[in-house]
Length: 273
DNA sequence: ACCACAACCTGGCCGC
DNA sequence: TGCGGCCAGGTTGTGG
Image (cartoon, rainbow, N blue to C red; front, side, top):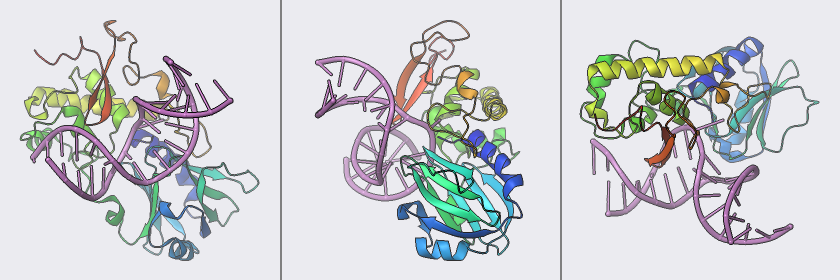
């Protein structure tokens, strides 16, 4: 579910409500969600930890704790972080509850159980090596050209590669390629500088638009209050197979690339010239 | 280097 | 109603 705009929305919502608060403990009811340390150690070490900051790296949320430890969360496809009062009954997909010193609970809910939590000294232990943030100047045209120059993979697959650029997922890759009029299957090393420039602008615009709409809720995405985003009503091509292109009216098509669905307009995004 | 596919999980939707 | 098949916003690992 959550790509950069969704994770960033969650971060901005949680930040003023969590900074300065202290975790008093945790209950882990599905041990697989806690990657490090062991679930028991996770609960034990979290108790007494005061939150001093909340940041985002790609699709990871990073809680800065005063001890120097980091609480890292990845929501994968269907995870949510819900801030609830104890009286609110947990949904049936709540696999971990983090208790706060003001009585509130931060609940990790995840239908598909793919999401993961870490409590580690160094966030890189959880995130691995990620590419630059899409809005960072390190995501430069020179960087893009250098990284893509020798790669014949579809440009869509390159956008989903978190070691190339962090935070883009299936929705915004499709939306950005539509806006930049690039066919998703086009080999990454065939894009000239001008096209790369259009693509980078389109990526940034797609992410900003979704951020303004508080994320895209096609199915599972919810903010910390359990509310949906609005960007699903504003997409051009994602999951719009069979509908008319908003630009030219041609029927939107779906193809598979690297095992992922890709949605595009065959007229606006030609593969040839 | 790249691709195809499976795995991790559960539920929704469709056709029969 | 039930069942099989396909779909799903992500990432990792394996084998070719």
